Length: 331
Ligand SMILES: [Zn+2]
Image (cartoon, rainbow, N blue to C red; front, side):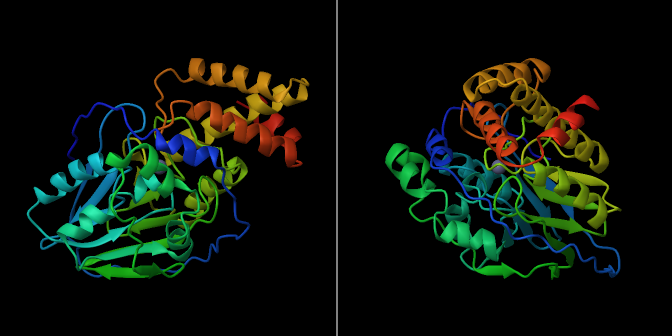
């Protein structure tokens, strides 16, 4: 694993991205399971570039004997340059890049990678491609205006559609993909290496991070955690979009527990009749106190506040408040 340290202090544009709001699509993932046979021993090494502190995001890679497969390419040009430098030290061409979902902290660096390897295939789901192509979150324009040094000349759109539930073979590596549907973002693609049980989840699982619920999908976050258990029962290691890789069930359980806890705190405050602003300030404070070692996965300094706002909205509007209260009390 490669790990570079870097002082955090960029990407204020992402705050506006969030302020512009987001829509959660209603499409549901298909959870059909297809048996996969893995041919002969597969040879690869796994690596990662990241940095410490708030807003850190992972660029993962799978190094084959002759090439590199990259998963996610950073939130801004500065960190993308560091991720690119880390990949270049491997001395092998990037054969393919995967974008796990349509949040800009995972695709903004695509241009720099494509400049280095113009023929590389860039894979994403149709929904992720739509989000990038249409600037669904309004991020591209905002970052160009507020932090032009962090913006690429072009926000590259992936050129290879990952068909739902595919099994790909790239330079001798079997990669099983599953569309996980909307939860933390409008969509997410899980990438699984059956030869070794390594599972790349994007941001549907985080490790050591506050959850991100602004898109009002905490209910779906929980069901997606369960879907990972159903779809990838043999997963050994989860490589999240943010935070360290770790044992699959440990990460799933911890992410679900955080989500249930945060939902419970908000639901109880709603049940007490507090007004939304009072709920936001109280629960934000509670979460910082309850998880003192957690960082936030995004560049927004007020990301926990934004997440609580999403929970307040979600749990106020959906008829699940009572269930969330029950969830919280079962902690
Ligand atoms: Zn992310």
